[in-house]
Length: 185
Image (tube, rainbow, N blue to C red; front, side, top):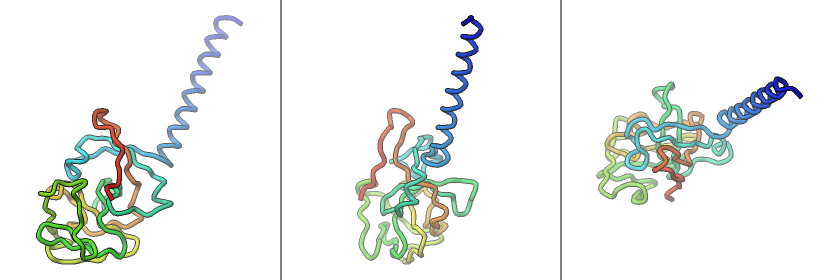
């Protein structure tokens, strides 16, 4: 076999390998896992602006989000944006904000595993201080971890199930912040 034939064989093998890798990447990206960048400070201190988080696109087809899950969804008022927030209420739950605290089904929600005890959660234009709402069927009540600086369900209401993109499970960038995202409950 001549040198040109060897070079040609190498090039063909390299292109085939690259095409196969690209196809595998596309299948994973479209159907299984997708990276999302945290934009803004609504999830501080747990997830900072600029961090990249891997989100499972499949899991929510088999199970419903649970209290404490971190989810990515299409922003209800801005369909060209994706938001990342924490699930605080599911269908049928009654949510009330009173004296800077969150009450779920009449019980004070213990958020000490992911929030500093001094963090206060006050009402917004959708859910005012002292008012109570019941989460409708196929909907969720979500809050950012940085309560004073988060656009969330307090302002624009519930997130419908069909707006959910996936459940976040792994912070992978920057490398010094790499960690699994665990449900605190």
